[in-house]
Length: 102
Image 1 (cartoon, rainbow, N blue to C red):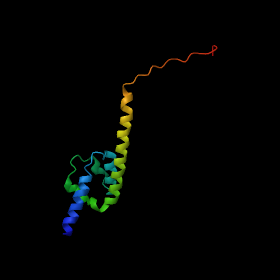
Image 2: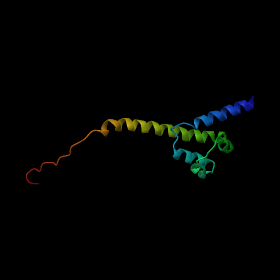
Image 3: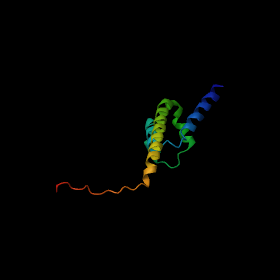
Image 4: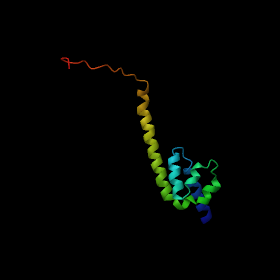
């Protein structure tokens, strides 16, 4: 029963790591936790390697990074929503009229 609970927990952690809001910079922080920054550049990163890292043992630190990533993602979406209406807006800038020859 304990083995099943542990495995279920690990699967939950792995699922969380698949979130689209986790960017390369967040993965870099996660790999630094395990002193494996070179993994960031490995295009063939597998579940087996993730299991070998024992991410469940650093869950609280990983969770903090993921929460940070989620907040950053929300701000990015908010900024895009503010930015979008103004993208097609054109502002004509005219020279201010000089007063009294100054």
